[in-house]
Image (cartoon, rainbow, N blue to C red; front, side, top):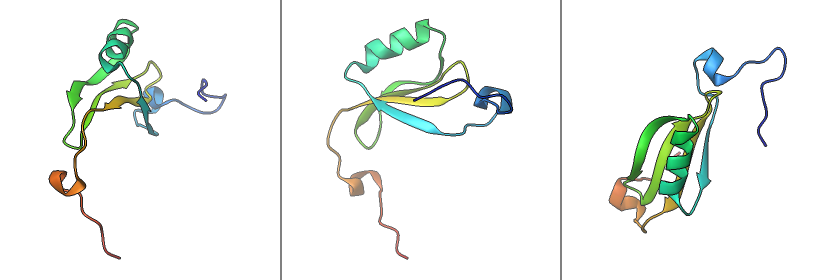
Length: 88
């Protein structure tokens, strides 16, 4: 659930910092990208395939919240893109 900032609180756009990043999976990333751009979203990353197999783009909404819109593109083993298990 999203809403406007309450009285006494600020938005990322006003503070100049991201407070979170949300990933939303959508089937039609390209179509979603076109609609978001047309609606005024600030595009941070054009649609692209990541090294870990997601097809996505990144945007800031009008209040400065960071969004990733993504769909699974292909299976990639974690060691193929450099993931490692950290030891305690």
